[in-house]
Structure formats: C-alpha cells, structure tokens
Length: 41
Image (tube, rainbow, N blue to C red; front, side, top):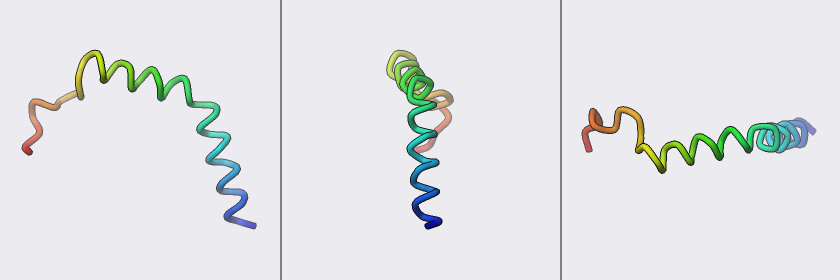
C-alpha cells in the first residue's frame, strides 16, 4: 500500500510540475548547463 501511495504522489508531482521542468530543460538547451565551465570532466 505504501508503494501505491508513493507512486500516486510521484504521478501527481510530475503532472503539477511538468511545465516548470519543460521550461528548465528549454533554458538549458538555449543557454547550456549553469557553471559547466567549472566542471572537470
């Protein structure tokens, strides 16, 4: 039952925040990852 509650909460969070996540992804595509120049790869 706990797994079902967690899954329902996750689905609700994804639905409620889908627009914000999409906006964030769009910004990263247009501007690149913030602070990427400091990353050591």
